[in-house]
Length: 108
Image 1 (cartoon, rainbow, N blue to C red):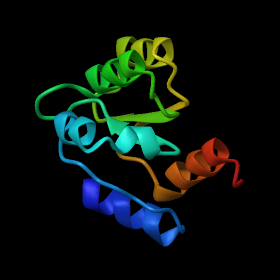
Image 2 (cartoon, rainbow, N blue to C red; image 1 turned 60 degrees about the horizontal axis):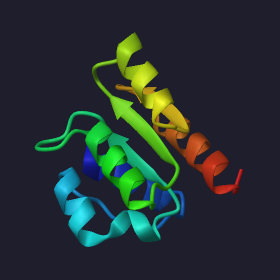
Image 3 (cartoon, rainbow, N blue to C red; image 1 turned 180 degrees about the vertical axis):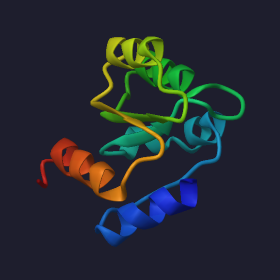
């Protein structure tokens, strides 16, 4: 999924950095230089929600889009409470993701 999303975003002209877990993203300092973040909620190690919380505590939370295969009202509520720009339930169409990213980056 990660490589497919990266490919879709790269083909749309975006620079993409991809990480297999929240800890790798945090240690790379990627969020501090990102215009936006596409974050799966269920990651190995820390969850996507925990990643967003850690970024918020560090003062560097970029706009983010939550994606998940476990779409529940509770997950949507938590994403909204954390300030998610949008929420996509898997499976989703690449055009939907690109549309949201364009809106987030002001390139729509």
